[in-house]
Image (cartoon, rainbow over all chains, first blue to last red; front, top):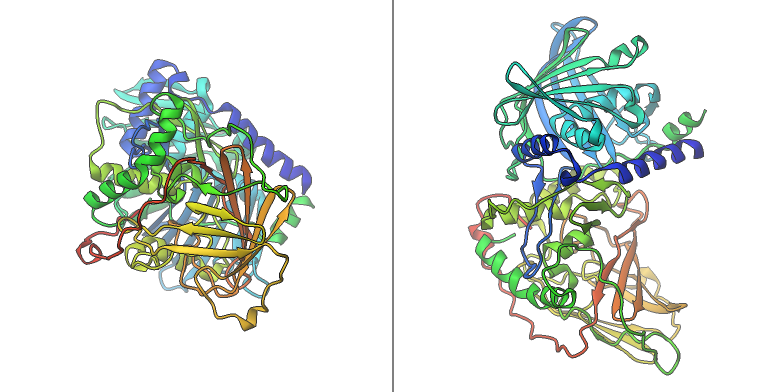
Length: 280
Length: 309
């Protein structure tokens, strides 16, 4: 328990010390990252009420919630799927709720959650936090795969590229701008390659692990149809179509209905039994 | 919240005194929102306690503009290249201002709404209330209990605009705001004479509850219970509570600064106690409290989107 806490704290500290500002980035890298962050609506400042204040802009993306539907892979077959995701970057956490209904079969409901190095399945939202209110099943071995979904979202890509600093490379492939950078912390050893379109939106994200034992971390995700989909308008652009592949096979194909970006109240407390399981 | 023109005008009006003061002290526009560094000595009363008497920012610190609200909610911009979340310690990426593209009112207000919310220090509610909190914040134009000229309550009032300190009690004044976040004037008379709380079951719930105070070294500790459930913890977030809420506020004076935090317990709603991000106010030695503006809700009927403060 203490060791895990120390590791998480250390990662947070490393992150705190390592994040470079835009001006500290190489010119091309800084320009490309800023353009992408601007396109997505991640950069904000406001002078309201600050008569003689001129603060720089900051990255305001923290919590988000999206709802969509489509298909997902169940034992090699794509089945109808209702998709609901709550996520946050501070702390890094994600809760993926899916209701999958195979043709002629009964609906299967799952909630898969991750926060930093902890992962667990919930029998209901927030299970395991209040005695008698649902079951939280520790799934800590799945933490990396679940975190990867968070960091391969367009906002995770831009944040991750900033975190990587000088390790982020900018190149051009087929006329498109490409960012390549290593992930860190629990996802160290995974390399991200992100392709931007002419409007600087992230349209394709590929991940490659450093060894075959982590093959599940080899993914390819396509994002398209960007728009502001929040009921509360924020000018943050979100993709309307997400297609994720693993090993060349489509595992998720979702049309997004709503994507709330106004930092909604989404929390991810770790159930006590999940913390305990991590120490054993 | 409210029509944009009114938001801008009111926020600017309410904030200019405090913000201008800070800017003048720094010798130019502020480019950071880190808490002001204390200067001067801490005066003491005849009984040896720090003397909190005075006008603190002249206006409720909640209303001193987005730069301060950002700090209140835990994002501190320390320089043109560094910012961090106070609660988690996580770095926040900083970007130069895009001066070729000035913000219009709508952009500034949308940005303000996001800037105020992006911090990580959030109370952890029991899971059955997660959707309700989210709904409250999402629909704050209609749901915020302070929007219809009601008191902000405790702990939302945060640092009082004026404190008078006497040997056996302290007196807090929170002037009402007539425009943005329209709230009623609020005051609290808090004994420091060692008396105990009235049993909770004997109290009728009120907006400020029953408060008693004691000294913990040089820190004034204000302990309150006996609340109604008609207030939120803060201007943002939709953080509701029940009648069993217990709030412990800690006030510390250091030179010309006053630091405030509140720890909130609510066994009916919260999974665990929640402590607010520390807020820091500056003493304004020669300031007088302004007249409270009449509070009259006029904008709600004209709001056509869910955008809000």
